[in-house]
Image (cartoon, rainbow, N blue to C red):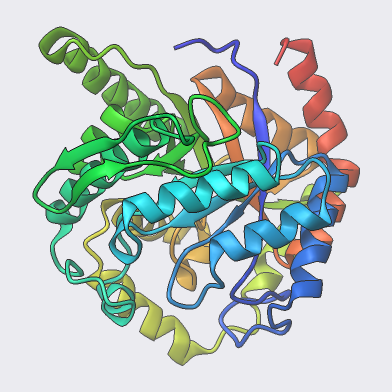
Length: 375
């Protein structure tokens, strides 16, 4: 693992709607025009890619990704998908088609699990089978990568027989634009998730946590990679990525005021329902986020300098935010760069204005510091 890998900065496309506040109905419903505006703002701000989420309330990631590719010139789409809802051969072909149409501006984020209620609503038969979902994901990615390796009309075919998938003569039409294939981003904090990532992913994603926690996760992943080398002869490396929120203002006081404002209209009943929902998940990463939230309650949810878990009161997933001035947030991000994180998926509420604000006051400072380090 090298800390001299280029650092990439990404944004987020809010396909479930957007607004200044969370804990209420979205003030801005998703629309083609609004998603375009967010994507263009992210591109103008200097973000290199944007995550398009997956979930029962989300717009289809590949279709949104194709739309965004047509509306932008450089921005890449990190398309999230769930293995239980699409066959691996179709996923490989769809990603390769978008890769060709965008001339290499697509990446794939594979999402194995979520809340059981959402998985059931989407028709996933393994909604309550955590380890089996990762077993299926491993097979899914083996097929996806195998089919990508048989792209084009003269490639022969790919054969596979597993517990969850059977493929005979599988090919990828068209072949992917990026070779050997579009990058695969993958997150999973459980042992099953980490082992799957070690075998298949290009970038291992984590939700923001204190530096020591992230350093520990990276060390654990490096351990799995070493075991693979010694026991299976599989010599792979990983890059490491982190998902975080941003609240950046010219002064620290303004930043904290803006952070708390996001929660200021939350419906108390929705807060209680979210707490019950979080309690039912089998996702280890989500449980870690809630552990941070509970541990930091007496400290106003500050988990480390300029790091805040307050949004976990309402939202799941990567809720931890960097809060502070451009210089403070840059310093915090660089602490994670120093331990090996080279990909950051960032966002703020509302996503349009926060892309513009961070593009104006954070990105120049952060890019300058990264340039000094040759990153």
